[in-house]
Length: 464
Image (cartoon, helix red, strand yellow):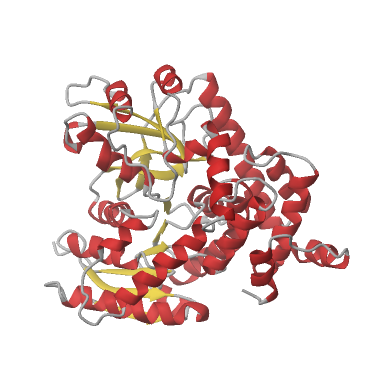
């Protein structure tokens, strides 16, 4: 029986990651026959959308497949009758990320895209937008799957399930992919010889590894990491080693982002050094983005350039495209996703969103049971999940007290008057994208609160 051709919509289609996505779909065309792809963006992203869209079409034209790439600023036009919707947008663009990073750093605390105060504010800006996308999907493509890569991916995906009441959603992250691509070689194995079991939260998970005979080889990989072998740390994370004694007793491998928690002192020191010299990660990424878009403009370029690997989200296409292909063809492939817990991690409620190993098929993600954590990991996990719930509720309701609770719970934010000051400055900085907090922002403006960091203040004054 011939399978129905597929319509895919990508929201945030002007992203520099889109060529990764096209490469992944082209690679899988035989099992995922795409009819059309729609790339959607906003007015401020129009120029990038046109550059990336033209390149995406060149990539398809260079392939054996006849696929049309449509570009639009009209989300509703694109969503009609979609089969899969992927989301990879950044509310406020990279300037918002610059403010997320610089304002906390200006007070001596971590400024990072998905951790600490910056990660909380990325969720505040993003969750209302993803919920409005879900409302459009309910009307225009009620049978579609939503595949979310927009950060903070775990909280955004959970908000879709909890507040959007939309179950056909899967959250993705490239971090587990990077680990699974790099680690097997450290012990002389290939990925198909190993079984991986991941559990935790997005950017806050751990994993264990077993060989083809069922023997656990986690410790061998840990030992190899301390012999200088590449464990697949994302490009955007400063590589400070974990304490080996901690990993030896844990008998699990933490994800790269755990450095912000397990080596908080050193990671903060490094971040502050960059803040005061070369600029934060967002300011560095702006440079990489400019280089990528210059490359994308080349009418001869019809494949993904190597420079894309410098971005922290490299390998995203493998996760996103494989997830879509696995749902479409009911493949039951092992993929690490954010999905409903349903008992996979007994230390959290069944309805909580977790990032776990799962089998992906026509009914979505079937989470693989991981079992309970030891006290240290359980404590971290429950603290972080409760912090996430406060963030999500504040994002939906605009409740300032709930936002303050999230700040006080977050391990990257020392609680006290400075935390409140950072919260207030970030509210002012992102006024344009936080209508749910409008009353509080107006109050802060009336009180004469200003932004301390010169770069963040200038961006805000320019309306950027």
